[in-house]
Length: 147
Image (cartoon, rainbow, N blue to C red):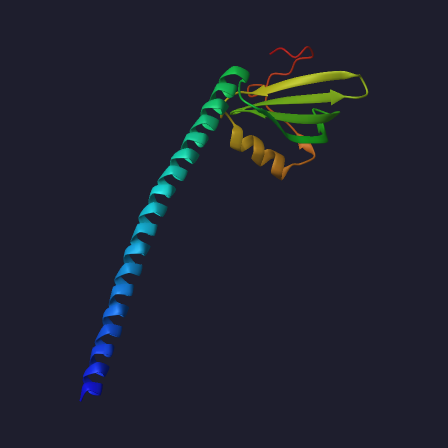
């Protein structure tokens, strides 16, 4: 009978030890999760500060230097019967056309300001890749680079 009582007590102690271990491990896990949450807030704060500084620096650079200029097109084509090497540069919503006439050693400039005629212009380049006809009211051509 003592043996059975001791076995019951041992069983009870094992269950209590398992329950105590389970609760202690749960508490340790919750502490660990809280610390990881605090660490993630610190990491997010540091990254957001870094990203904000980079954005501010980029904005200051843009204000100081102006908008970036991209060369979006360069190809040889015929404009009003004159064979040219045409380069198109984009700055914001405006476009600058530079046509180099290699026979006469002359450079022609044309401009499209803002979003005026933008879709029609690109539609024309897509549908007629070897011919460029731009109406004078959209683009002004000069030999000296001034409109």
